[in-house]
Amino acid sequence: MSTAAILSAPVASAPDDPGAGRTADGLTLTFAQAPAEIAESARTGHCRRPVLLKGSIRAVDLATGELATMYSTETERDGVLPVACGNRREAVCSPCSAVYKRDARQLVRAGLLGGKGIPGTVTGHPCVFATVTAPSFGPVHSSRKRGNTVLPCRPRRDHKDRRCPHGRDISCPLRHSDSDPRLGRALCPDCYDYDTAVLFNARAADLWRRFTAYLPRHLARRAGLSIKALRGLAAVRYVKVAEYQARGVVHSHAVIRLDAVGQDFQPPPAPFTADLLADSVRDAVQACRPRGVRLAGRPTGHPDLRHRAGHRRASRPPRRRAARHRPRAICTIRRQLHRQVRDQIARTHLDCRPGR
Image 1 (cartoon, rainbow, N blue to C red):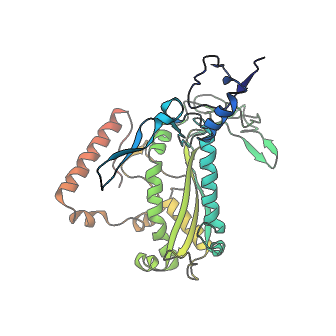
Image 2 (image 1 turned 90 degrees about the horizontal axis):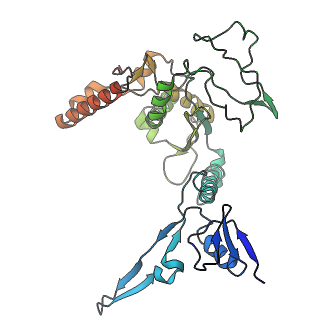
Image 3 (image 1 turned 60 degrees about the vertical axis):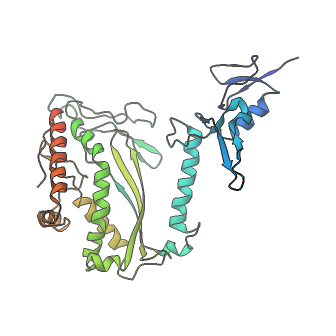
């Protein structure tokens, strides 16, 4: 009697046996075929979309000049070698994404508690967990919790009298679950600033680059040191993760740690504390603003970007003085790129003005 088993694990290739077939839920195999198929899938960590490699590895004997085949995929099943795709996105390949998450967790844990070549004394170093979010582009449906209790989305007592400029109700008394498809949707699509949200996502990497450049400057200013003196005393090390919020806007989480200069992971000198680092992070976030583009008079920066002009000038190097020493060709290329970007944004009906 022949008994069949349903194998739900992903497979790298189709079986040779014509009696086996695929179903909507997985691959239909006999009990005799199941162990071999499970072992084949385990080679790639049960990757859903393995990359199938085909070829050989050959070596040349330098003494005789003989060409010998060291390995060939012809010896593999179906003549191909399955390799895990290594994709980080869970929606694309959940097994590879889980491996990446576990590896990233171990690296972050080692940076906080020690291990993997890092001494355990790093637990006493100044460290800050920072979350940098985008400004509000308009009211959206959200899920808020107080302990285990889900709070109403946007309750308003005057919801009957308070309306948006388009006459829509911008309140929501519902308690949204995490799987509610309305999470992140705008309460009024006409009021929500989609153009600025898209531009913020496009400039998110530039904002983070500026943050990493401004942080040592503000750290040195609060410590009463110059940048050159700071670089000889302390080093800023961080790990950052960027993710999408429910409203489709990028925000970043970062673990920032201060070490002494060098690769031996020694603690920084006494003036550098966690409070000093936290205040410097706030100052650097407030100073971040991408140059060159404004939408309807609003800067595309982080929510706390209402900073004083003095802070802004202090956090930037002198542009005009540095431009005098640049080669003429670099200045010409920069002007051409600025014109191309300005023309491209103008074609999308955005208000483009050079930053001052």
